[in-house]
Length: 132
Image (cartoon, rainbow, N blue to C red; front, side, top):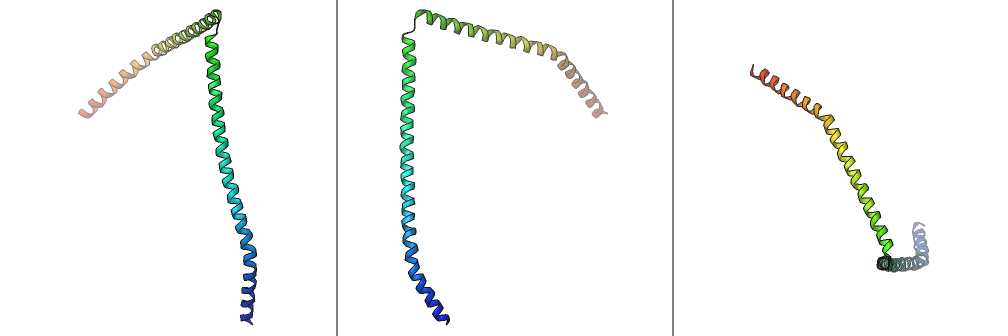
């Protein structure tokens, strides 16, 4: 009886295996082709986007150069004055920072001097203690 069970199971598996293996093989090849198609499609899109970005940058540079070439004298003077005003504001800010730093240093200087004196006194006391 046991022999017939194993023989029956072997017969069933011999019949079922091709029924399962062939569709699985087809599905595997189909999924692989989908993946390869997606990879090539993605690479093509990336290449196109890079080309679009390069073209956009070229157009932007051309427009900027065109604006520079065809600006009127009044616009040019206005831009120069704006740049000069910005530089003056930066200079004022730098002077304010410098004076603030000078004030901070002058306020901290007495404390640094006192701390230096305390350190010297401490060193003298330590030397005196070690020599005794």
